[in-house]
Length: 160
Length: 102
Image (cartoon, rainbow over all chains, first blue to last red; front, side):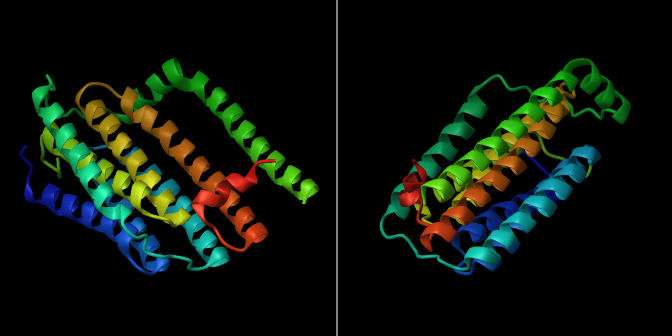
């Protein structure tokens, strides 16, 4: 498990900001920490020579989803209470999950092939040849979920 | 490459993020923080896709595009439900969201 100093700095920032996003007493600071987390993951993508994916991560996650979250925080305000008791069990379970995952990844036959760089043309070609059909299904999924959410809200409004 | 690290180091990053997400999902009572935790778990899965994609072919990268789109959609619908619940009941407690059934 080797990496240069930049990787471990980014690792530390990602994990620290993830913990702050869950533990900060102010939801606004939690949202800011969440933005830092998503931006650092975008930097990981840029570092792996995937600039398009990094840009999409920044635009959709660090841009769109964060604005939605900030809007929700603005609407419902702060209603955060520290839950009693359950944190210890959750910490133990998540540490067990971490140890299990790392052990399995070391014991498995994951090789260390060198990382390659794919040009954008290859990305576009594979997308059009193999996965463009899924965009149609994805559109139907989006429409179905929005229709379902609309149906729930309308039904509750009629019932109430 | 700027980030020189082997695949095990990236998997360690992914599993660490997954562990923090699972911890948040199990221990928080705030819906927005639970949403943060779900997004962390999704991002951990995305890092896995991306790492194996960087070694082999571009398919994992394309899958990550779809996953990011679906995660944004999930966040939008989840927050819409939270806001509707807040407007109806004046507070958002995850264990009471079953009241949305009709």
